[in-house]
Length: 212
Image (tube, rainbow, N blue to C red; front, side):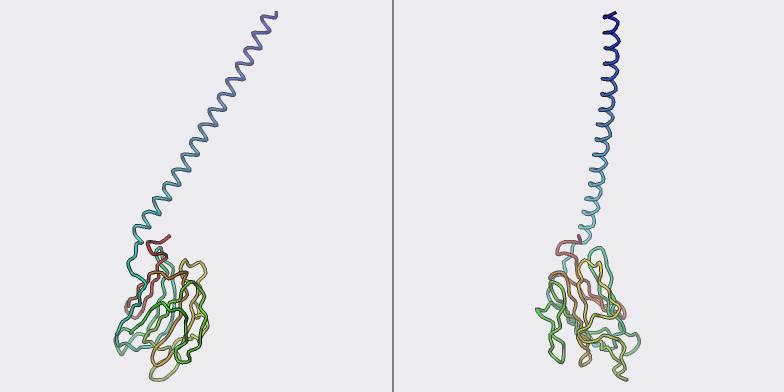
């Protein structure tokens, strides 16, 4: 009877050992799969970032950008947009005659002083980009306003919440046929300026090497 009892006990212990071993194997397999899934997801994310980085390399530099064009049609709107590699500001110029793209002078400044008055206007951000374009905020013939910017105030309708580079955008002045804007950015970053039809475009990169 003692032999039979010992045999049954041995069988029960063996069964428990098998179940424990099976549970450990299942847990280990699940852990390996989870780890593989995590590493796979991380690898895919890094690959995506690498692809974006390769596509976002910029060579614009941060030196002043100027144009001696002769356009003088008035400014009608200023708007902004977010892109993978940069933040963009667009100055909309009224179409029609006289033909010609606006002259511009875009550069980083230590402080932003209002054209005409010389008053200092505080612009939030790590660096300030001054934008001056030969597009007054009024009609040169009738002197009626074409854009509602007010000196020292945020640009109407521009909301920079969530932007990677842009921090602040304020109206400086419309003076002697030009409009002056102050654009606060995160840091002194590369930028480019170009015209696109009746628009003047200013792009500021998210970083020196690529977007992040």
